[in-house]
Amino acid sequence: MTRPWHIREPERLVELQQRVVERFPTLRFVVDDERVAMTGTYSLYDAATHIEDFRVLIELPADFPRALPAVFELDGKSPSESRFHRNAGDDTLCVVLPDEYWFDRSECHLVEYLEGPLRNYFLGFVHYRDLGSWPFGEHGHGVDGVREFYSKLLGTSDVARIQ
Image 1 (cartoon, rainbow, N blue to C red):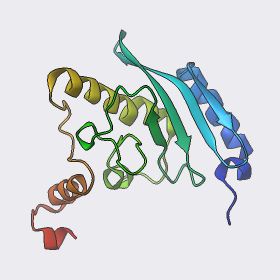
Image 2: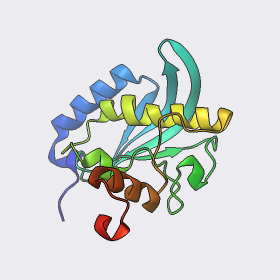
Image 3: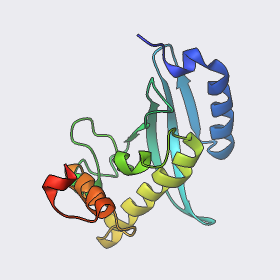
Image 4: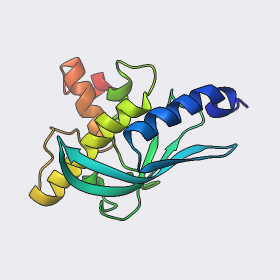
């Protein structure tokens, strides 16, 4: 079995920790032989306006950066329902549609992920919770979202052609 990325490349872990803590000082790293995780408060801002804080656990998989982080919202602000884009099997947040994310990337850059997709997830969640709609034209959840993405990409709604 291949060793986890942070064991194979300890210098990459140190660099990653420095970049993340510089931008997100309320997140702290938890590292052991099996995993790398971050825990703490994700503070959501729109420009200079503080919107809300979310207590999170963000786990980086053993094959990071070629796999996406698993994000857990720990205070239960985001209900465990698909309409809030939470995955029923493990209760992770459905931050991005993986097919769309990987379409033009080969690696996940963590600070970019935290500042982009995760920020947009929380902005969208707050908007949905408070106003009843997702502001960014989100895909459906799960298989529905995958079909929507490929339907738009391929210019067809013919499920047989999409699959």
